[in-house]
Length: 175
Image (cartoon, rainbow, N blue to C red; front, side, top):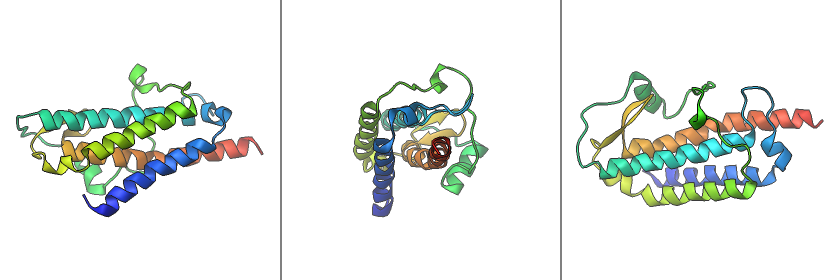
């Protein structure tokens, strides 16, 4: 993983943190419509997902057994594109897909700091792990440590559009 990728990953998280600090609590918790997350829920989702992805990196490192199976068609396309397509993705209903809307800005910043810590912990190690040590992703198939690591950045980049949309909705609301 190149130095430029590393800098971009850190810049992206810093951008999210900077924006987070600028939101009022009302803006952070505002749910613009039924079935649409607030900014706070989006941040909570990204943090929890990222930490889960880093847990998957760790599972790959500790796998100790090669996995011959590969990615699904969707997984192959995701990595070919280098990110999620610019479409909204509806997650299945369930508690694991219902992020909290009560976290404070400080708690969310602490969560982003945890993401940064885990990123630093794994960014050099993932390149040394056998690419055949894999953990299954329900939608993308069998991913290795490096792919799980890269999925983090893809996921944060994917939510930039949602963040911008929610900020625009708020800006129109207060005019």
